[in-house]
Length: 190
Length: 121
Image (tube, rainbow over the protein chains, first blue to last red):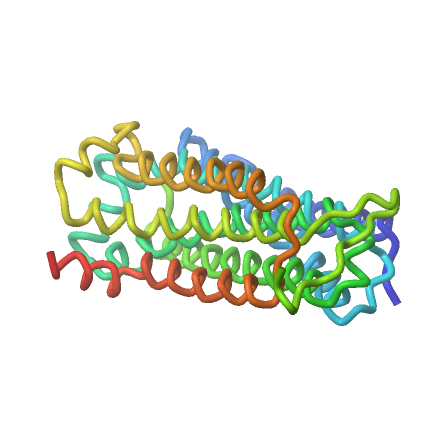
């Protein structure tokens, strides 16, 4: 059974609202987000990535249904992949912005190079590139889904190309998300 | 024409879309990512190139790497789309090419790999 688009939207908005509500009542925004410019940008980057992860995870499930030829809610998949692609662009843009702080004087790069060089040289360098992989893969997958439309359902090879490419984009997002969270944990935005 | 050629894919409006359109989109994406890997390796080898692609001092050479990779992706897509949009191609074969190329692109941005390649020069 597949949920309707309205149910999916309600689920995403509800999940974000619950997280926001819990955060808002347990920590004042100035403590939760911070007051410096970089803390605010970092918060948008992290929240954008989280919303991206939520939406694209549901889209991955629908992509799997497409792959197996059992997808009924094609319209839901179309809009969720488009949303994921949009969020990939937004998250990359905020990632570029916060990267200025990362490389700046007294930023985490200097800290990591002095104390844990492998964190910068392996994990951060890989993260900054693998995060970019989400955009072309999700754009390509979304393009296929929109361009061919429901005709995809009748072509196993084409629907495999669309769904597996989306799954790979999601895997790249997951890698970047985990590495980003780990880096923030090791040296918080100040 | 290839023996394993697929049928065209009909959209609801009965407009047939050849598989070349899909192949162009997938190949362009992976070309952009392969270019990202190559530009990153050249940047690790050549300090002059690294300086030349520093389009923004805030994010350093990463700015040029992004611009070059995304230009290769979108420019490549335009060219491939025009070249392949009316062709029926073997989707299975070209999707395999896409997957293998994507794996190579991932390896090219994995620091132990790209640093080892850079050290050869």
